[in-house]
Amino acid sequence: VASGLDAIEISLRALGCKAGDKVLTTPISAFATTLAILKLGAAPVFVDTDDYGLIDFDACERLLPGRSDIRFFVPVHLYGHALDPGRIGRMRERFGVAVVEDCAQSIGARFGGRATGSAGSMAATSFYPTKNLGALGDGGAVLTDGESLAAKARTLRDYGQSAKYVHDETGYNSRLDELQAAILRRAHLPRLAHWTEVRRRVARLYDEGISNAAAPAMGSPVGSESCRHLYPVLVEPARKGEFRAWLQANGIASGEHYPTPIPVQKALSGVPFEAPYGFANATRICASEVSLPIHPYLTDDEAGQVIRAVNSWRG
Ligand SMILES: *Cc1c(COP(=O)(O)O)cnc(C)c1O
Picture 1 (cartoon, rainbow, N blue to C red):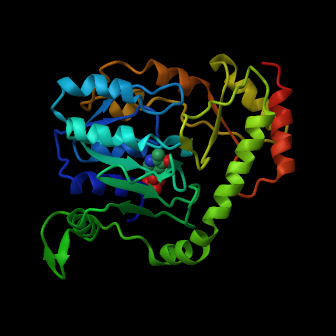
Picture 2 (picture 1 turned 120 degrees about the horizontal axis):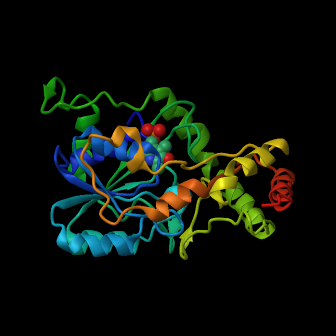
């Protein structure tokens, strides 16, 4: 498909998600996760995150028993960390929710040896250039082990065309550009394992080297073998700007993922959504999170430079 956004929207539609349906999801992600839900006219139901910025499964399992109106679930393997596939599977079995895993940041990540994207009914990923497996332009993919779901997704991405000039529904123009497909297949996919290895080495250097209590690593859940899409640290919200300016002064770029919880974005005002338990954790994390440089071309020396700058900041 043409993007990660389309991959999520098409997956949800293939599973039968339509206007008025309720979709459980997380308040911290790329906006596209929620946008895919909104574009279908469905209503996001936000459950707060845990201390790792990932959706809180315990809160989901508290909410769902009384909420048979929530039929869909879009968990996000954020930062490259893998959510527990056992918990995702249990949500499907216990509550009958159809699951679309958002794997845009998790290519190469595993949990207990199991790749992300294999626990849901479908999975969506993005080949946007900044992702771990990026093209040189936009792209995305839908993954499923269901034959009829795959057929449905193929139809939807191609103007709703089930056979040549036979249009069964109002689909999309969401082809993966062939040039991007060739670049991904021939040039980038063969390098992915090595790229992931380098990301993990950089993350290990940071894990071992960063010792500033004012900018601790955010950490990741036990069992997650992260593909280290991002490396988040947490600083006191009032000093985030100062910390980022300090890094900048030391020649180090930083990012924020993400500065604003999705439910408070202006695009959500006036559209139906719920946040039954609030999103206090997500709000705290959004206010505190700073992403350190991490990518396959970062050298050990450069990682050392980042570590020295972080450790010498007086928070
Ligand atoms: C990038 C991203 C998307 C959207 O992918 P696009 O290809 O940019 O549309 C969705 N979810 C997450 C978690 C992402 O990081």
